[in-house]
Image (cartoon, rainbow, N blue to C red; front, side, top):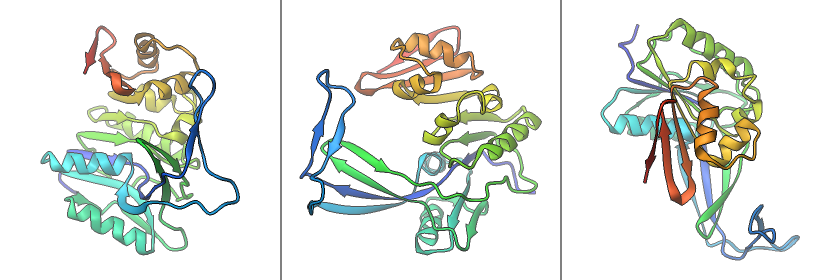
Length: 253
């Protein structure tokens, strides 16, 4: 059995292709909301540049950040037996990430996303491959487990992770839900929320998670606490971030 891991991240990893586009416009409603990126339909639209960024995604990024802080950091993820998969593993190793829990699959391509970068914002075209998610056998409990973006076929995997968490109450879980985890809903992931030590999202994500139009960050944080997390962190655009432990709240500029 391995020595205890300080930080174990679980989540899909991806290669992001950042495509810088100037020849486009942003179209919004009269009140400035529900904005869309508009390109000329049926035309050839020039782009300024493209840059591939390998081995990214919430979980990979968090694992790298932990390693750079000097923690022993591991990642449970899946890649294809292809060029992008090998490049991702090589990049993680360069950043001192334990990659022994990364499964390589023949016949399933590595996740590859297109980031349309216009002005200061980006619109991401995402596709999570249907990997056969499962926790490794004889997985030693880490000090902290970070869970984030997984694909639409991962519901049973979340249930397996929740059972693992229940068997290791000494382990602290950090949950930062991705697009499909938010789509799964709080009822489907209630056991994950119940075991969460620290929870991260932004205001818009909190509204989608809670299925509400409530704009008060304080109210949103209280509702998120009611799902189970001990500590809740909510970011609010350029305003800053808020943190709470269910008894008091702090604003972080």
